[in-house]
Image (cartoon, rainbow over the protein chains, first blue to last red):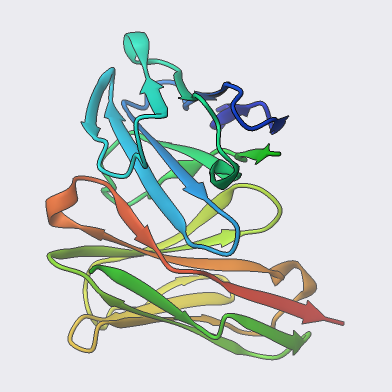
Length: 115
Length: 112
């Protein structure tokens, strides 16, 4: 089966610009998660979708971040306007069951650099 | 505040050595502990541990959880250069659906 796909793999943008990251989960996985790792810090949770519904968005840093999952398939994470501290690697993960033994399947991440 | 701590943060060993990576946690309503291996890109799942004292094994890797002392270890025997990676420990909680808290990771380098 195809894995979790993220696009783009790298993005370099200027402060104040807008960037949209995309995640295609494994087909049939209702649960989709966004995480990010900023320089020198741990991977941190951003939010969790179950199908098209936001189950938990407690990790979203501020209102410059907007995540959507229309139709319950792929998801987008938009950062508008981007700030320097948004630089990092944004991971998407999906799972079929809610951590009932298999753990997440992660995508390769999008490395975002804001200059 | 919920947190996961890993030690050491960085480790260099020779091929054939055995290594033990440590993970301790302080979280409310613990549900499970997970280990991941991250090479260049996506973290890949290794183990999920929910019960104390039951060792999970996969080839040269094994892991065990101690819920009383709030820690887990990941052992790798007869290390190979392909084991070089960042090993991530993460903890999930009953009260937060499927959000997990990651530790900082242990960067393991295995040299020939």
